Image (cartoon, rainbow, N blue to C red; front, side, top):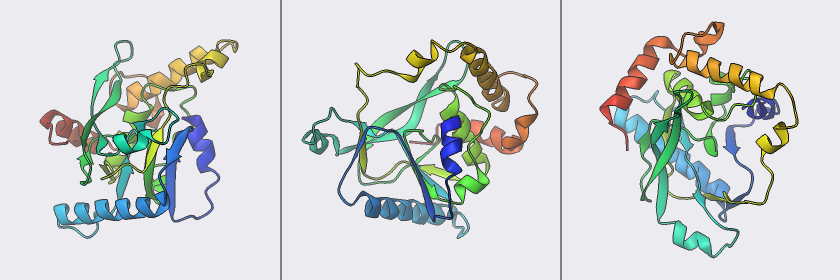
Length: 232
């Protein structure tokens, strides 16, 4: 999470911003596709809200998996991951996001944004900047950013087609937490980050003055939407 904040410091006035994991394969003309997909969500949102000011949308989801063979992409393309489910982490109480597969061809409004892929107007990093105080955080990053986006007026959509694919396996590769095992103190800093997420989402009442990062009244509305299951 802190890495996303540092990367965003490289912003130099570009019109749009994309967040993406490493080890992805883009389909040809992916950049043209992204602008078209975002335009689709803006149009759908404005029409649904009957409000020309509801243009702030985010296209995001977990990219489909592939196993380092381009031939795999054809069979994976008909279905698109939609961010509309999850489960609560048994230790922290934080919602860990999951996706379900839906036929492509339609951009669907959804309650969550994924860290693995996100595309939006660059205004998003001005209005909802990445939190620089979430060291070593994994569980909690996505649900917190989803809440912050929605409570600041950004509606979240799955793309209507797959633009990129992620190599999830890499079973023999090292992981960040493998490296961290040799560094003392990281676990305590991660715990502080987790407490920050818990407090912002009202999971606990930790002493954290950063609650202004989430608009409280809008947070209640967000959670009522989840309870009503009006997404997907």
